[in-house]
Length: 114
Length: 111
Image 1 (tube, each protein chain N blue to C red):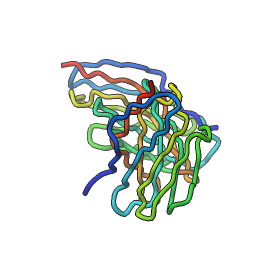
Image 2 (cartoon, each protein chain N blue to C red):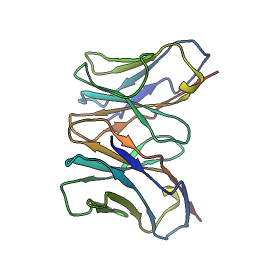
Image 3 (cartoon, chains in turn green, yellow):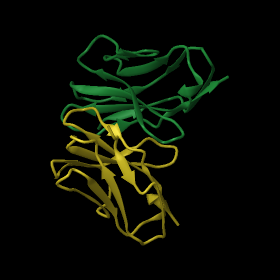
């Protein structure tokens, strides 16, 4: 069974700093996707970044980037120049190519402090 | 373009009652998935429907059922509600591949 583990329940950083959220996963599949989702207090789940497992290059979306280590089954999210609007729950998630169900971690609550 | 919509926004029920939650996918999306998010946890997969057929089911009891209509909207039904069914229920739609777009959710409280 696939599992996703986020070891940091809560983090706080000052505005404009860089923060890294950790995620590890377990699977025997070869083809899969990894995601980071953001869920602000409004509850809307928003896709932040996506990584295809077959791609060696780490995905980047503006201030958000990932460090994907396939052999270690690690998928961390780096947020650069953090902003107050980045305050939210962040979920690491996994999905195989064969199934459309997303498996989520328990989340990391991120506070950006002014 | 409108995103995924869900109704109602909030709902309060008592134990033993039945509830129906509704979801309208993004126009053109044929796949709808349902997730349950208990407070403080990540969402858990309940069902996925594609072209009105059930494509996947999570580890939930038979009290949970769903269906998808010809216009690709979907309903999630929960019978014999328990206190533990209190959660945020999220619907997500996708065209046919991996990117799922989530709705704002329905907050269900069971008293």
